[in-house]
Length: 358
Image (cartoon, rainbow, N blue to C red; front, side, top):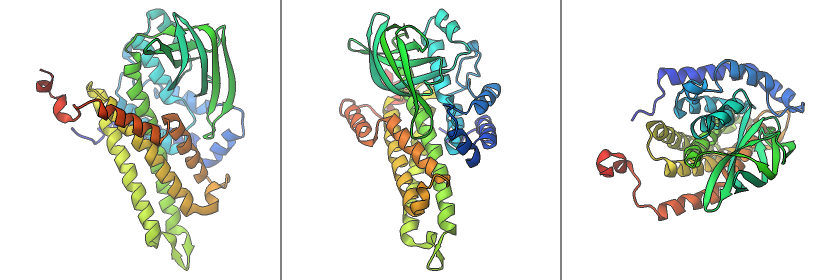
């Protein structure tokens, strides 16, 4: 197993990095925040034109049919740049539809903006009718359709919701990361129910996508914080020479690298077709922990300027808090991981071998 990105994967990351650099400078972020837009529309069109919205989409559906590793590489750069575009939501939703929906549904969603609201089971399903409220679904203020989770008896099902359909209403807003969101209310609305395997396929990939964004956010937040403590002086010395500050930065670096290692293993397993749910749960715990640790340390050493909205570092803290909310928080995810471990006794590389399945 090689955890280094290959040349093609690095090329995806470099292409995304260069594109985001043209649209996500601090002054461009501030200009976007001053508008009513729910996403960076000019950047989104460039992402579409450059194929960044179809990385994991099957070739038969017009995509590049790459793996989660390639998507991860791009999403890390998106997190670094704080790029307000639904890259993960669009292609995870489109790929799930391509694999688990009928041909008519696939045709109906082609060329549409899609999003996901799979952080909680928010709907109740009765046949092809759904009722309930999904809160603060990212990019749902602008999207044409969304994949949401619905309870169908004892099963969790993924359903496709046409956001312009009868029985569907939206209340738009923005979250603390300045991403456009919408509360989606369904009152007996007709939905398309994806095949039963959709949630098992989508869950670890949605976790990996959010963790990749968190890795990018935290890595760049730490990089800028290290630069700040190397320049900011007190008592005629850079504060980065103080042992306490050095210790905080070292702790943050270890957390970032632990998250990177866990995430790389997760996407490797997904691309290799190996079981990955416990790895996804562990990665989600680390993403929450890393986002909080790095965000808290960055705020601490920056002091008051860290929350000054004219200084760019505050945006990283807002993104980390929002990603933590999207993940569900550290405590609940640690409990979910513990529950899985308490009910399974086969975890480790030896169980991935062919001999273990005989």
